[in-house]
Amino acid sequence: MNPIVAIPARLASTRLPGKPLADIAGAPMIVQVWRRAVEAGVGPVVVACAEPEIAEAVARAGGRAVLTRPEHPSGSDRIREAVEAVDPERRHDIVVNVQGDLPTLDPALVRAALAPFDEPAVDITTLAAAIREEAERADPNVVKLVAAFPEDRPGTRARALYFSRATVPSGAGPHYHHIGLYAYRRDALDRFVALPPGRLEQRERLEQLRALEAGMRIDAVLVETVPLGVDTPADLARARALLEASHA
Figure 1 (cartoon, one colour):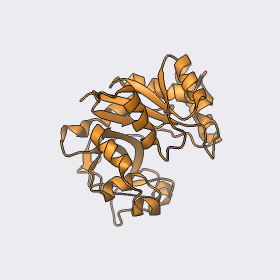
Figure 2 (cartoon, rainbow, N blue to C red):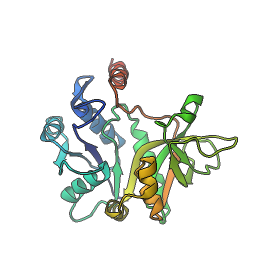
Figure 3 (tube, helix red, strand yellow):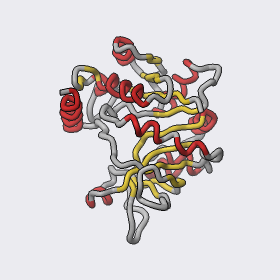
Figure 4 (cartoon, helix red, strand yellow):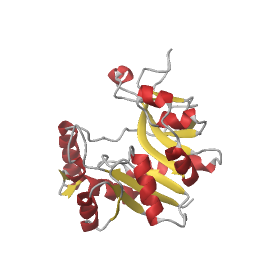
């Protein structure tokens, strides 16, 4: 494998406008995410951004950013444009999509996402963690991944059968919190962004269902913790506290 990590970022957030540039422990959030991706040590890191302000912030920190078309409908489309720009020769055969709002991401999670690619039939990989808080089982903001993991142990892998905002599957047993970090084979990313939106994707408002509807294989890896995604002012305050504590 020869992976490249791409981080999509745009300023137009409805719940937290301008969040990629929000200061966290002395650096813009997008720079903190870039640092975590670099610390993973899996390959070069590029930020795929919609606005020049983000590109400038990344460049000031010593990173590489690509300015992409602002109208992209998803982060997947944005990272594909950026990776094509920096690697037209297609030397990188795996593209890891790290969301731009995970400033406290454990770099080990980026590495964990690569493990399933030892199986040639896998198109896309992602991560999941066992749900421990009872309230999360019924929370539609917590996306559930349906997979028959053979055991509840970090590093265990299984094929993703479905993703839902509902509490699935029914019956006694564990439920899994889907973590929105993906890795794609390069050809699979090309195919995915060329597909029309799926019917289940539009119903659940979950982009990954498009791949499943098209017959693509997604394998998931169990990890111990869910990284903090920054979507609200309260999330931002928590991320600041966590990173400031780690730098103290």
